[in-house]
Image 1 (cartoon, rainbow, N blue to C red):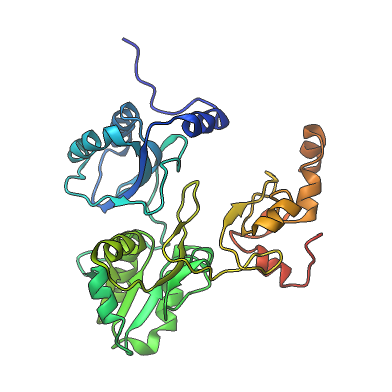
Image 2: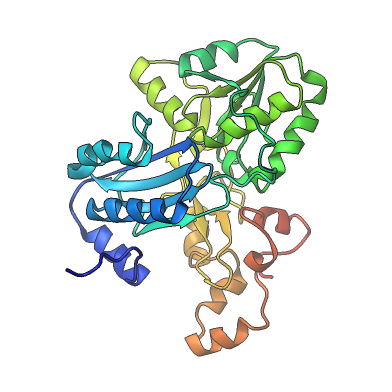
Length: 349
């Protein structure tokens, strides 16, 4: 009997074509749990073998502090998938089911070992997860945020909150979660006695963020249980008022799922209302930015005329120019394209 392969060797484009052409229904979901894992490599290999058999696709991060997963799975395998989770210390875990979903969100299975499932820049032992924020349901979130003294904080990155956020929320201008922790604590330094409600995509970042705020002396800290994904599900099921405006950024091929009909962001190229995130079609750039349909056609899916012209070159010439050329994506982080134009540069570059 041949040994089961525990990694993917098929070309990504081939896998993408296979998934897109497969009529079998799939479900996109995410889950996380903080708990101690000792033998990481053995745990990872067992998980890969089990998930691969069930046709699971997506990204799973495993570390000594727990598991963080965003995956899609054939609907026929969902019940069996849930039944095997106990083998990995994940029994009873909540699965955050995507709101807008055709299941074509991932094209291959990747399970990686990480130092942490959420990079926070903190030392081991800095946080006491027993002393974290109180979890709020969607109904409880709506009730507490109706109070004028409540402080609402978005614990996501700037390119996430730009396309959608809760009304009245503080939106830190940060590129990473590790950046946000000290920045948020400093912003709210004079409001330690007020109720502080934190939220993120699926709840995983707020587990750490709320514990961090408690360690900084904040007394009344809360977190939205299950994040925006679970909030939207409860709002729809219970007929609650939806306080989230716009689109929820997600970390898969969809790059977003609509929570309300509002478009609160603008195209980074022309300023028209738009909230569709794309990566520049120039692989040497690949910057994440917001683009409307008109600019997508005008720039051939690129962030600038320079990138649009570049992708018309032969593969050989592109390889040579990559050695010396600079593009938006080689100079700025995710979603910082608009900031670059704000320095006076034109789209031509």
